[in-house]
Image 1 (tube, rainbow, N blue to C red):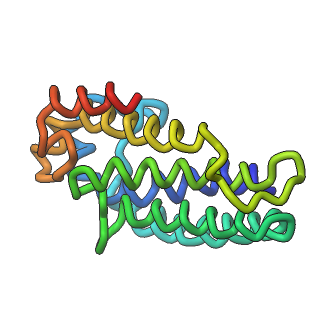
Image 2 (image 1 turned 90 degrees about the vertical axis):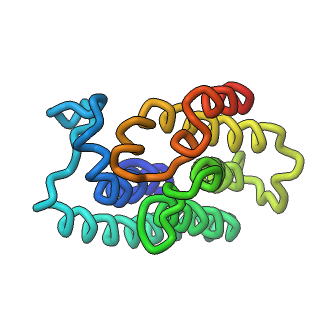
Amino acid sequence: MLAVAFSAPMCLVVMGGSDIHDYESDIRNPRKGQSWLDGRSIEKADHAFILQACKVATLGVVLLAVPASFQSPQTMVYVLIALGASWAYGSPPIRLKGRPFLDSLCTGTLYWSIWASGFCLRDGERSTSLQTSNPSIWIFFSCAGLQMLTAVLDQKADSAANIRTIATACGERVTALFSAITL
């Protein structure tokens, strides 16, 4: 059930809210094509529907995570961290995507918490600590680095839309260097 939670419902929560609030940047972004496969921007007329779908998907993720939380209660904590990071990254009033460095740290936290929720369930063990896991730090930094890389790709469109990101604050080269270091 946790795998189902982290498939389409979680993708909708992570991408949907952010895409709504990235509309001005997305319509200026040459990477965004006209098909859904190209990352097409969401039409303004669909924003309210997508936002409502994100809220329903959030509830769905929580409900789908309940069975796993019986095996390891920590799982629900990490699921809630992932959901909180998703909403904090892409949606006002917090919208960490618009706060340089916090945008990358939030992304690292989001994907690390998804990994951690599954890690708690490994081999049926009841894990009480992630401290013994070396992949934990690698996952956090690699996901933060990948976010920096996408910020570099979107730097011009984000600048034109007055969206502050690590790439608009530090420039493409410095951000690419940070990304390379974390990857």
